[in-house]
Structure formats: C-alpha cells, structure tokens
Amino acid sequence: MKNENIINTGKFFFWLSFILRNIDLFGYIFTRNTFFVNGGFLVLQWGLLINLGAIFILITYGIFRNSKLDSCLKSSAIMLMNVPIAIIYIFIGIQLVSTNF
Image (cartoon, rainbow, N blue to C red):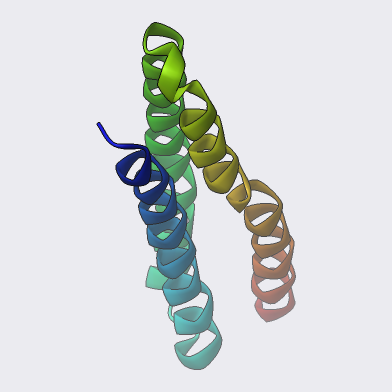
C-alpha cells in the first residue's frame, strides 16, 4: 500500500465520523426528533469500534512494514483528532437533550 493511500484511509475515517456526527447533531437541533439522538449514540458506539479497529490494523501493518510505520502513525493521528471533537459533541448533545425533557 502506498503512503498516500494510508494517509487517505485516516482522512476517510475522520471525515466519515465527523459528517455522521454533524448529521445527528444538526438533525436533532432542527427537528427535535429523538431518532437523531439514538443515531448519535449509535454513531458513537460503532464509530468507536470501527475507528479503533482501523487504528489497530494500521499500527499492526506499520509494525510489520517498518517503512510504512510513519504513514500509519500519521493516519492514526488524523483519526484520533475525532476524540476531542466527539467529547465536545457529547456535552453539546447532553445539554440539548436535558433541556428539552
């Protein structure tokens, strides 16, 4: 796998998680439909599992292909940038849902 493809893998998972969280957050803000709250929890749960799995695979690949380790770590770092964003979204979501009930 080329270094560029490894970096693009991290970017893909980053943007996929980011866009799905935005759809859930803004969907709830605009519609107040609890479907988006449930979807947000599912995105958090499945996103955590899928992203951790992808990071594990990238790092394992980088360990076995030592020349690709730097790209694998950069790709993993891109994916890990979602963690603080997800935490912020969790607090925003809790505030929005708790003020409506």
